[in-house]
Amino acid sequence: MLGTNRSTTGMSPRLAALATASGAALIAAPAMAGSGQPSPAQIGFQEAVTPIAEQIHWLHDYVNVIIFSITAFVLALLLWVMWRYSETRNPTPSRTTHNTTVEVLWTVIPVLILVAIAIPSFRLLYAQYTFPPPDLTLKATGHTWNWTHEFPDLKLSVDSVILQDDEREAAIKAGMPPKQVPRNLAVNNEVLVPVNKVVHVLVTSTDVIHAWRIPSFGTMTDAVPGRMTATWFKATKEGIYFGQCSELCGKDHSYMPIAIRVVKEPVFNEWVEASKKRDRAKVKEIILRVAKEQAGQNLAAN
Image (cartoon, rainbow, N blue to C red; front, side, top):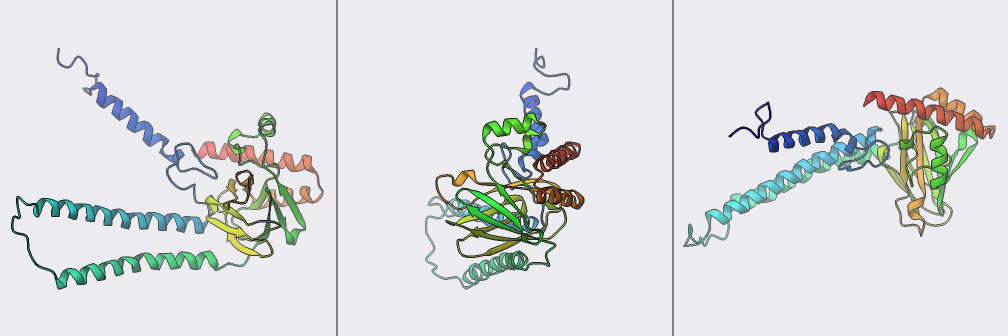
């Protein structure tokens, strides 16, 4: 009988499956953005947690709207011309060679589009290279193949080396949330910075050219031997944020990650004190405690 293949709601199995798949995609969509690290099936930027990263994301979306609009217009124009001026509909082609109105339009409109792109681009560049007064200074030194992070004003230095698989497993067994020690991104010594504080980052290298990059911060600058480059960030959300060297610096280029954990200021001060005393047990206890708290906050937020 007709209708025996329909569900009790009157929807065919094919439509029901399509609706289920669409619903699952909508539910999974937030995970595709990524927070502090790449995510499976990611199609967009990692979550922006600094004002600069937010501006970068806005400019990206804004320019894409312009690109898609131009592409759609040109495609529609081509299809219309192919239909309207085909040999069947237009057996006698026009011999017109110039049209003042069209020539003015295709000169002025692209100029206006470029101006519309240039204004927010210059605004973003100005924001990136206009450093607000720092609350904290961090110096990052690239080596083949790991990073040293120093707080010159605090007389504190931390070497960060990638965690091997057995070290990751040991950290997870000790209670570290697995998502916070991702393979090829987790390091043995995380760098902590306080939330909502302006951090100036001085970047250099001891050997070859590296690059200090944190996608969620919207920051990247080259680490050049014998030269000091600089960038800055102001993280507005607690959590751990990973980055990597973005220059082809040698055979272990893909194995020199960066891990910055953004915490409350009292926690940062506690970590600094324990690090200065070289109390590794206390440092690990602080990081593990904060990691569990942040994992719980993210779970509650999701």
